Every structure is written in structure tokens, then in C-alpha cells.
Image 1 (spheres, rainbow, N blue to C red):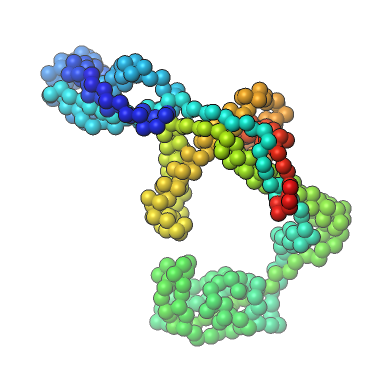
Image 2: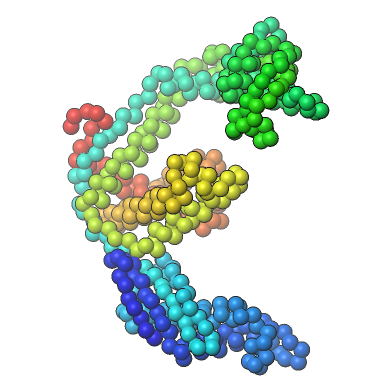
Length: 431
């Protein structure tokens, strides 16, 4: 066996392997035996069909695939021993078969081997940080209350005036020359597209107009999109949205005693949300500062697999939405290669950060309690709008309990870094 070694970085090795003919022959012999157990021929028991007959009935691709698996598996193990390589157990090697021929016999392949990551952690204490403000304003409280009122709004038919911004209208659009009765749409005045909003303004229920409309590219009726049409437009109905009065009665519909109590609860909830957001920002600052003090090397396979998984998920999401990856990348101002590279860099940074967090947790001799895990479980349940026990069962079913543990570890490390930061001044203030 010939091995050519290339150290791509401190944690990734590429081996180019040329197998000995005897190794290739052994791999094919085992492949014939394995496949013969699946072959059923009259007069022969499974696994006992002579080789000369097997050679005529086994598909070449299936044979080569089985042989390659046998050959690569044994050659890879032998190469690790010969090169004294101890790979990272959590990352699978990436194999690329370059050649396999039974007749010669010949098998060549390359394999990227991941070594354990290397972390030289800097001092996690005394890191500078700028604390963002977490103040809740009266306007923000008012906005949240208005959103609650909108959820309990009612619609009232409008008969004494024309369409105004915010009204819900049912309109019928009939294109000249079409035999059909026209198409009905429910619209919110002021939120359609400029030309239609202008036409609807002031129209009354049952009023009819003959107009020319150029439908936008993203119009819901695809056969009309980007086309100019002469149309008959009828306003079938107009409804206004009525918000409930902000009074004690409204507060009680939310199971709260008074308007003042409602405001207090909303302010408290928003303060918690802002504090958590501020915490995330501060933690990112501290981890970035710690990375500047540290040296971290990670194997390519550790972050490449994460990037590939996320890119696959994005592609599936777009496919279900009827879009291509090219469309999605373009919407985000990138080409596909640029989008893929951006995700690779993001995945690598995520892995590096995770390693640093775990290293701080370990070196500072931290531990997790049931209370720590329960806190994160309730937090995750809230994010997914599930009950804690439902969230726990979901994590177990998906074998994702590690995510719960890592979130708890991250919070512990975040607490530690913030507690030992050199400065904790509000954003914009002088230390």
C-alpha cells in the first residue's frame, strides 16, 4: 500500500492511498461472498453459488460498490496505524474513490481525516465589554398593548363612506374579454400595490369602475403578473377594523384586573426580553474578545458537515416554497457560491465558539444541576410554544438532548464571563 500524506491544517490530514493488488483481490472476494447471500438461483442455496456463475449475474456497479467498501475500510485502518494517526472520533472521514478496477486489480482513493481540535484558551477573566441598554419606553408598552387590541378587533360593515386606508375590502376584478365572472380578492386598503390602492381610495360598496391596471411581478394571480389589463373593478364590500377600548373591561378579557396592571406586566415582560437580548449581545462580545486571547484549530470535517446539513435544510425549505437555491441566494444579494461560502464561514465560527465555551466550562470546573437544565428546558418550550414535558419528549425523540445540555453550559459560561468582565458600562457611556 502506498500512502501520500498532506497536512491541510493542524487538525486535518489528507491521505492519498494506492492499495496493493492483493488487498483489492481480497476486497472483491469478500464482496462476491456478501452478494452471493442475496442471490437466489435454482439448484443453489443462498451463499453457495459458484463464483463463475456469480460473475455473470451480479451487476458490476453493485460489485464495485461492495468491493470498494471492503477495500477502503481495511486500507483506511491500516493507513492510520502506519501513519500513527489518531482521528477525532466524532467526525467521520471523507472518502473520495478515484479508481477501482477488478481486472487489474486496482483501487485508489483519498481520505480527509479529522484530528481532535486544539484549544489554547486565553485568560477568560478581565475581558472588556459594553453593556447595551435594556430600558423599556412608554411608547414600546403602548405599541404592545395596541397589538393586543388588534388581536381582539372586530370588523364592521361600512355603508356610509368610501374606502379608507386600513379597511378590509372584497373586490372583484373582471378582465375585458374574459367570459368568466371575474376573480374575487380580499385586500387591505393601503397594503395592496400603489396603483390598486389609488383606484380603491374613496370607492363605495357596490361601486364599479373601468380601469387599466398593470399587475406587479409578485401578484398572486401568476397569469396576470407583469401584465397590463383593461378591467372592470367592483367593490363588493367594505369593512372597518374596530379596536376594543383600552379600559378595565378589556384588561379583564386578558385575565388581568386593571389597565395599570396590564401595563406593568407588559413592561416587566419586555424588560426580561430586552435583558435576554442584551445578554446575547454581551456574550458574543466576550467570546469574540476571548478568541483574540486564544488559539483554536478545528478539523475541516467538524464544520463542513454542519454547513452541509444547514445548506440542505435551506434547499428543502426553498423547494417547499417553490423556489430554487439560486432564487434564494439572489434575494439575499449573493450568488450560490457566495452563499455557500458564507455558510461555511458561519459554521466554522459556530464550531470554534462552541469549543471555547466548552473549554471554559471544563477548565473552570463548572457543573450542571437539574435546575440549570430545567431553566433551559422551559426556555426552549416557550420558543417552540410547547409545554416543557412536550419539549422534553421532542428532544428525546430526535436524540437532541445534547442541545439542551449545551444551552445550559453556554448560560453558565456566559454568567462567568460577565461576572469577571473588566468593565460593564452602558453602550455609549464612558467607562
